[in-house]
Amino acid sequence: MVDTHLSKNRSISDQRMETCRSEFEPLLFELIRNGEKRGWKAAEIAMALADAADDVILQLARETKSKH
Image 1: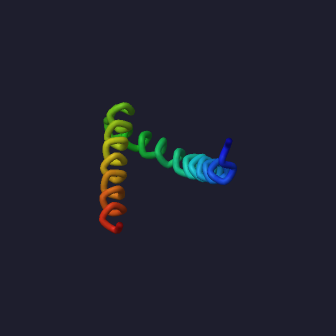
Image 2: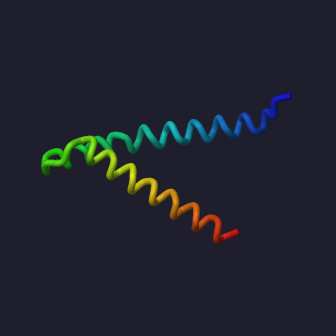
């Protein structure tokens, strides 16, 4: 049996993620373009940003865990 409440929450969460990405992805490409103007390769910039994002995710997870 499918839990429709859980399915609905996932749908809302998926929609929020899609909306968030569509809002911030252009800014990501702007960062990459600006970095390329400074001599960095797009792949280097993307990896640096992904690494930084990973650090933020880990920090948020630690903060969330410490609140419980």
